[in-house]
Image (cartoon, rainbow, N blue to C red; front, side):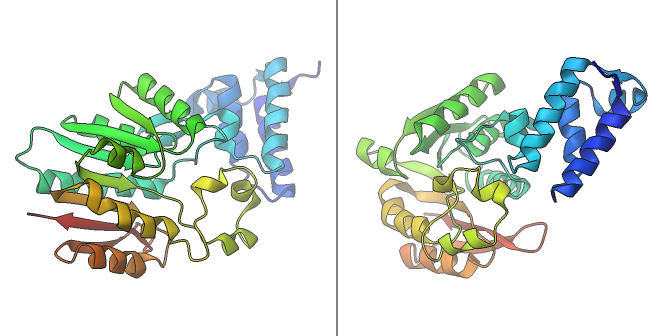
Length: 288
C-alpha cells in the first residue's frame, strides 16, 4: 500500500474538487472526519503518513462529494447553534440562517411570556429537529411538540433529541393537523417550511436538488403554498396571546407579512432581515 502523507492527501483532494467545481475546503472537513483528528492536530501532523484505510475511505468520500453529494450527508452531521446534529438524505441540512430564526424566537418568547412558567410551542416540519431541540435546550420553560410529515425525518429528529438530551414530543402529521385533531392549543408556532418556487430548481446547485428532500424544499409556483395553508390552520391552534415565527425565502417577506396581517388583523407583524441583508424571517405577535 502506498504511503501518503496528510498534506499530500489534502493537496490531492483540493485539486480534485477544484476540477469538479466543488469547494476545495471540503477535503479538510472530510479528512478530519475520517481520521478523527482535530484541526489543530491535523495541522501539526501534516508530514505524517495517513493510515492506509483512512486514505481509501477519504478518497471515496471526496469522489462522492465531487459527484454532488453534500459533505454533511457524507460525514453524517452538521453544526447548528453550537451543537452537532445527525443528518441524512431524509432531512434538510440545517442552515446558518435558521440559527437567526431560533435566536429571534427566543428573544420574543422572553419578552412576550416573561411571566410564564410553561410555554407550549410547536415546531412544524421539524426535519432533523434542529429548531425544536435547540429551542428546548436554550429555554427549559418550553414544552415542545415537533411535527413532520416524514416518518424517516422524525426518526432522525428523535435520535438527535435523545443524544442531545432534549425532551420533546414528536408527532407524525401534516402541518398543524396533529394538533387540530387533538384539539390542542399552543402559545407559539415556529416553522421553517418548504418555500422555494418549483421553477427555481433550474438554477439551483445540484448538491441541493439532487440530494436534499424535495418535500422539504419546494412549495408551488411562488413558494408560498405552505404559508397559505398555515393561515387556515393557525387560528385553530393558537391561544389568544401567541407568537408565530416563520423562516422565508428572500423576497417573500411582504407577501408572508400580508398573509399574517389578513389572518390576524390585530397582530404585530414584522419582517426581519438576516445577517446577509435578506428578508429571512417573519414574526407575528398576538398579545391579548
